Image 1 (cartoon, one colour):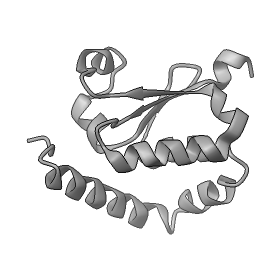
Image 2: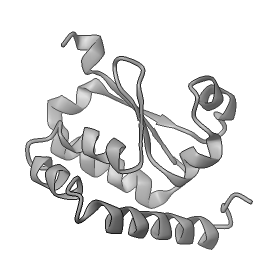
Image 3: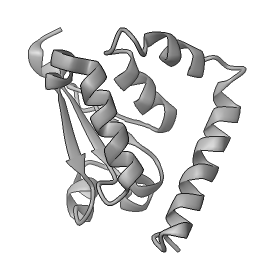
Length: 125
């Protein structure tokens, strides 16, 4: 895998304090591995997202990651892709990918994000 194929672009909600905290936590755990991850705040970037084939409303509701080949991964697939880069998070990536756990976790994830967006008045209509 080339260096450019190894890069990830993470589209995250920079207006969300917990999302920013999660990003900083990931960067601390990742160390130098995190150098291959570019963090892109989606705030005010609707056109850029659309050009990449990402619905801006979906980007607000789910994490999206672009891999080095230009493939877009979303929701739990995006989290798994990020976690697999950090040795400490690899077991968690494996766990959330299990067919028994994944559907329930996805449901909880969407409920939590929906509640956060509603609480902050940013829930898309």
